[in-house]
Length: 55
Image (cartoon, rainbow, N blue to C red; front, side, top):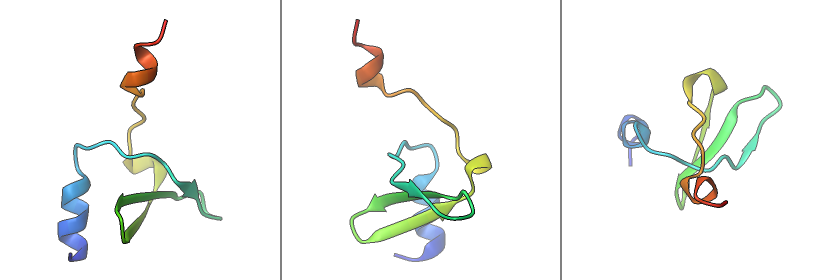
């Protein structure tokens, strides 16, 4: 999968943060063999719907 196609597949979807690098970039693993590093100001924090349902 090419870089542009991979990034376009990320838009509008939620992913678990896997870590941070020394510069504060977020590590995502959207596909089993792909890792994406992205600046935090380019993502939106969303609440886990499973945790929101807990009393």
